[in-house]
Length: 433
Image 1 (cartoon, rainbow, N blue to C red):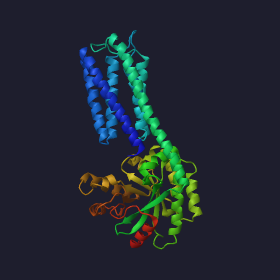
Image 2 (tube, one colour):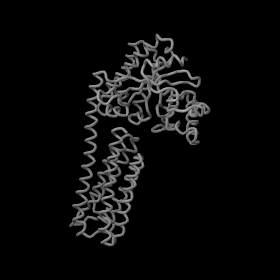
Image 3 (cartoon, rainbow, N blue to C red):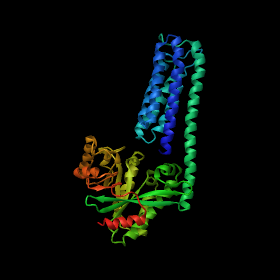
Image 4 (cartoon, rainbow, N blue to C red):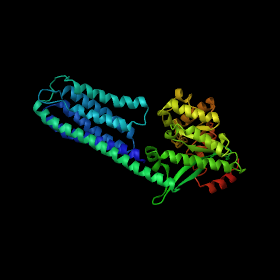
């Protein structure tokens, strides 16, 4: 679990705790007033709070968040309209929780499509402005008396402020941890603590046709660390630019060496690229400089991008990737089918290859839905002139199922784990194309 996922879990747990405490605390008060609407809403809050905890514990954070958002928003709006109507003696306060909801939306949905994130943030804020600026409400038998609302205003305001403080504390502590890790990353790059591992990609004839470069951190205290530990911190701190430059230089040097090796001469090398790197104005010129400096045939270098990079600035990312593709550099779309892409966007993406995500490969032998998805990806890629690589191939039955569906290039533990350079060269000699 990466640092951002841990922060999301903490925020969801805070939100669930607020729902449970509020529901359990106010339900008896409303019951004593014979306010059955209030009791019903608070019991709903209590049950949904428990549900959010269970879903978060099961690593279903997205479902947990939308339940939390939907239920809290509906309860706050209903209470503000029917129960918490402002008067000369007591202000409306239930709507204060809407600001907390907006804060949660801003962070948890930051990697979603911009329109979804902006809508989810704007709706609670606009609703807050409406309730804060008017005395509008519908008087009914459920409207709370002023004597209850006077001390309730203190309780709810204090609780909403406490909730906002807890969320800001969690976010700040997470950013501080990422900043410290970013400093460690910069020192690690300066001290040559990073190393590249290589995982081959084979075709259906068991021949190595490509290799993916995977960065690892040989931490002086914690040993060998995978990218899940440090990549997001590198992006947040800006260290990803230094790390990405180092990886690209290492890849360029290897391609130069491999051009003199008959075994490796026809093997391409893939490098993962983050959106932070792509959005840097000098990124394209930097790649071109390396190609010229090491006299590399551009087609032997492949840049792998995930669908999420197109969610930031679609036009600019397409422009940068198009410029690289025009030079001859290959572009692969990693984790295809798991996020941002749609047919409307895919036809504009300057890619040569799509990589079938391992989540579709894992159960392809037993799940007809995964089989149908992979078959559709292969057919779509073929019609658009893309090649297809399946990731996460771990057993022969998965390879056979993929081959039957027309996918003829594979990467996974069935063939080889990520390995150091010397081991890669020995492996490729045994699987010479």
